[in-house]
Length: 133
Image 1 (cartoon, helix red, strand yellow):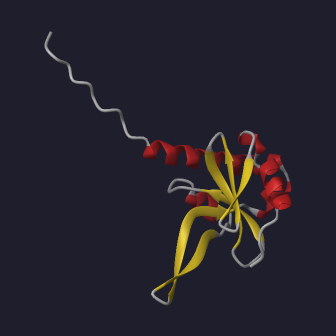
Image 2: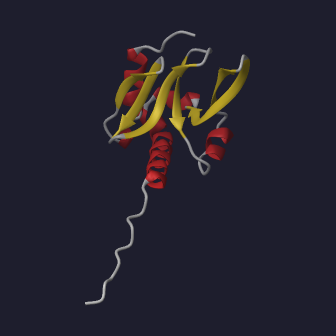
Image 3: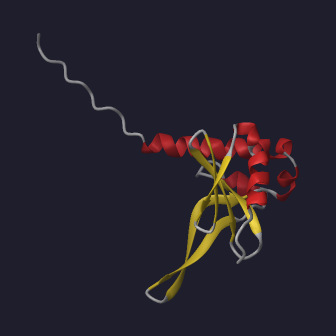
């Protein structure tokens, strides 16, 4: 597996720019792409060349699968046995890799998934007790 290049990560940031200014940061041998503090994508090489992997969730997975996108699956060694693990990221559709305009609906799906993930981590504020006056 080759390490993804900064040039490809910057190109992916351009593709995703319809949802806001994106930044790419090195992580785990690839890049994490975020906008507004939300992680929306990864750039990684899982053995078939560097790819853009967009954040997904239970609602958007069927859309990615219908478009023929691959799920982000990687192998880890547990007690000497190779085990496949997956993440809620899917490869970007090939035709969407040509321009920000074609990527726009997919970028929106990734951003929506990131917003949902953040919302699920936010705990509601405890209810205030009303004390007798």
